[in-house]
Amino acid sequence: MPRISATKQAILAAALELGALHGISGTTMDEVAERAGVAKGSVYYNFASKDGLFGELLTSGVSSLSRTLREARLSATGFASIEAMVAGMLTLIADNRALAKLMAAEIFRTDRAWQETMVSLRREALSEIEAALAPLVPRDTSESTRLLMAGGIFGAVLMGGLEWLLFSPGTPAAEVSAALLFTFSGKLDAGSPSAA
Amino acid sequence: MPRISATKQAILAAALELGALHGISGTTMDEVAERAGVAKGSVYYNFASKDGLFGELLTSGVSSLSRTLREARLSATGFASIEAMVAGMLTLIADNRALAKLMAAEIFRTDRAWQETMVSLRREALSEIEAALAPLVPRDTSESTRLLMAGGIFGAVLMGGLEWLLFSPGTPAAEVSAALLFTFSGKLDAGSPSAA
DNA sequence: GTCTATAATTTGATAGAC
DNA sequence: GTCTATCAAATTATAGAC
Image 1 (cartoon, rainbow over the protein chains, first blue to last red):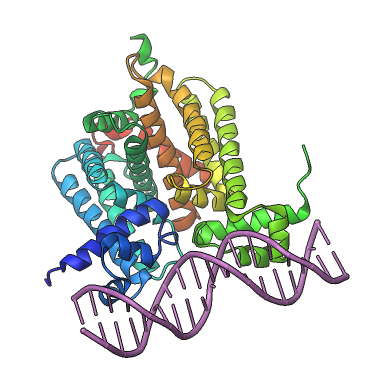
Image 2: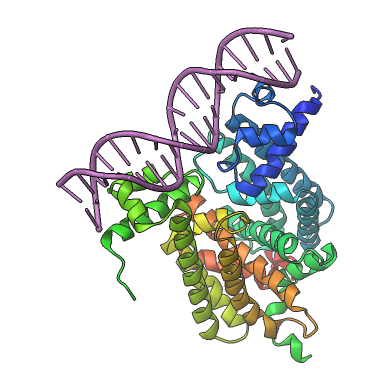
């Protein structure tokens, strides 16, 4: 594994923050260079193109998401593994909110150079959730339906997590996790708990 | 209410489709004009700027989302009103997938000229879900927690809906709705249904 | 490896004829 | 109201010195 140079790391970090702020198309290579504290020539020395830079950023981000989900899934069984995945994802989002914002904005884009890589990596991440779901849903549920459910859970945590960080960052992580899990607990559909 | 001219409508439609495809920053006014079948001068005759064009598109889109959610909420009580909102949102997404994609990509952007309008309109939409949630959660649940839950439900339907349209468009809408609602039904957390 | 300077294009926006 | 022509600025990418 070749070590990533300090320059390359600074460029990636700058691109991530700016991309989260303005989107990929809205971020310029001049800005990236300036924020990274290097000249633009150095950016192009390290990355072949703007697409190459952001492609690397996003694919490595989705990979780390998959790893997190996989570890969480294997750490428990049954519904507890869903709980672990929600908590793991929220931690990841909180620790790297720029990446979360960037991913939320770009995950459904289908016109990038690295589109196919992203589609397959996203599928990989959703498959982790789907695998945890498989023993919890009726046996005749099709794989595509389970993937739909997985997409829903993923979307819930991502949007809930961003809502949290952007609009009520004071809330403790555990409370956010509990709130999201509450919606999956079925207690919403159990009469009127507020009267209890 | 002034009627919207055919030209203006064509421009809005073109901007919506291109924006869904390439994002707002990735869409050029030249492309918009070409796709709308008018000259660029006509685009600027109808809209003061690119920001004005997309701002109008997004704010009207979020408004119609709020309306749909409100109607769905009032059409039922208890958990059934959540079910109605999920179904209503999915219909909206299916009928206007370009708008759904555009919204998913831009809803967390915080650097636009119309940022404040969007934030308040989004809050309005989430408040509809939050209102339906209020009688279903423990009485001591704070408003910000309920909004977090609302964000989660919103995210689940949006991402699940896009997953549906992009990757398994053959699935009937009712099945998608049922799959997403299943995750909120608590049946995930009820032992191992696959063994039943 | 990093920098400065610059080429080649693209892009938002405007002017003014019709 | 719509078009053509055009400007001024921005933007991706490269060349070549150090």
